[in-house]
Length: 235
Length: 235
DNA sequence: CATACACTTTTTGCCTTCAAAATCGCCAAT
DNA sequence: ATTGGCGATTTTGAAGGCAAAAAGTGTATG
Image (tube, rainbow over all chains, first blue to last red; front, top):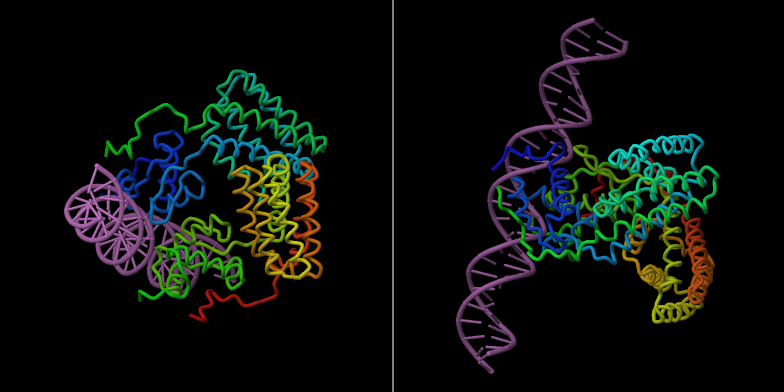
């Protein structure tokens, strides 16, 4: 068993395993609390246990799986409380970024932020959800960078990454694009004015609304009954 | 070469390696930017490369080392800007914890916080720096827990961990104990009143002062010239 | 004299194998 | 009948080896 691992795309094997496993976790194929057997995963993806092990390590650092010494790894159980806590943290972090951005962004950064934001209005009119989602990510990243604080940036990006699985469907709600744009507008306006307080409040509200929209997707209360260990059917 | 690794104490081999390497990093034995060769480290600690590799992985997640694919690991370079950014983040995080604590702490939590705080006054009078340092950690942990937000707790503890190497000598300044107690008192008083705004401000100021006290210990501007690969003196 | 190419050396990434710890099942004793 | 201890199985932790990628070095050529 060796030589063909053309299933998933580029990067080092560990990266592929991280992507593959995290995909299966966020799509619900692997259930929270489910045991992640190294040997099974290695057989499933046709690699040795070593990259699986390192991938589990990274996923553990990302908060997607939990590892206990000598007891293996399990898919992290995210309770509704914890999910709420993450959204709450996200709101606070975004507020900090917005406040700092209002105070610290250079003239150039403010220009591009505003320009891109205005340009995104077209995506809203067209209802281009995919593209708007892409822009949205860029917009927020710009905000995080504008804070000019590397560690805040790291914390924020990390939290956003952990939250990613739960905010997938947020833009499926009707009118969400327009509302999102309005909220962005409040943030941008405050930042352009240099009003850090208003920017912080606007950013916090923005996340809070996303939070409420995503709350219904909390895991742990899904009605599915069966709990297969690791569906290793097709080799 | 096998069988004797009684140098460092309990835990799995990876844990020992994480401790050993992080110790050498925070004590400055391994310089920022220095290359961490897996083979050398394995030989140095008389273990195989596998646990070294996983230890480096964890240290990378902790932010102490940087890893680039196919290019090995180096001791993370913490610039003064980044250090300032971490202290700044810490101040914001502590402020959030204090605000939330003021709003959410149970009656029991408030009682013990106040009681322990009052008890610590004795340590200040005695000038018991070691014990006060221990209490100080507990005090802040209580604050983080009082926020009743698991993710905020995680972010805060993580940031505190990264900052630990740089705040070692903060209590060596004269009168620092008394000043610390006064600042704690402001936080506790605000929390007992349920005044989240005041608690947040007091907590932020508290960290800011610690930050200034620790600023002189920033690395990256040390005059030492020589840069040995891995100083393998005492076994 | 500088630059580019090829070769050597070093270092990383992955695999396979071996040992130790934990879990599970079974049997016996109360 | 239940509970405690003991052995077999499963699963994780670690070691050593091999191949590939990057870094370093020297030479040849413009």
